[in-house]
Image (cartoon, rainbow, N blue to C red):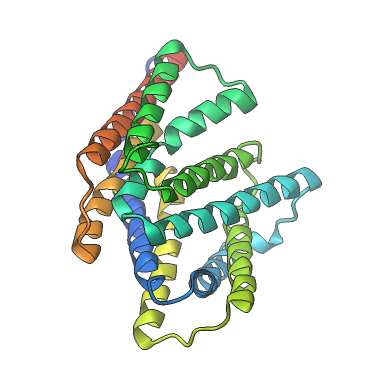
Length: 298
């Protein structure tokens, strides 16, 4: 059987949506890194979470998502995803306060590799020696970015790695969910938990009266987060996933540009080398998976 061809316009729409999603997420990170220089971390998370919650509530109501009633197993999986979301958010933003945006973004580029490995370990997905080699090479690239045991080692990078591992938990936990589970319900539950955690932390840390600039930046972060969520979901519903997924790596380009433009930081030589290795390994893995899917169809 010959592969079904996806219209170029559909692929292009998916690529543009994915690029927009990565830009929105990275701009959100930039606003959060900026605002947490003067505003307590948990208050920033809580205020941003309130903005994203309102947006997702409107989206869920508009799409009729509130009519959904999860079964016990579905509820437990959504809860597990929510725990992963909360943990990854706290770890990521804590690392982001202390690390250059591009360095942390480089670590997070290992996610496609880690998710592929996690799916093999948990769900028994088969990965051949080529993809296993790519995963190992990609993880070596992460070690080059982190450089443990050297003068360039930043211990905050460990939090970045832990954040990536919790993102793997977050993403793999929803794999068993059936297609009838609304994405808005899953996203809203996570956003509510993150916002709630932020306000609990604020009660412990104490309240900081935000300036107009801080309110503006945290609101922009929340809006960008909503755009990122919605465009990332839409991107995967248009065109060939194997064609669209590699454009996730545009987030690293955004991180480098915004890190320099806003904070005056540029990644050093070894960070660039490590990032290149991680991205190359990830692209090879995606290319290999696409070829295997084509063979299965053919």
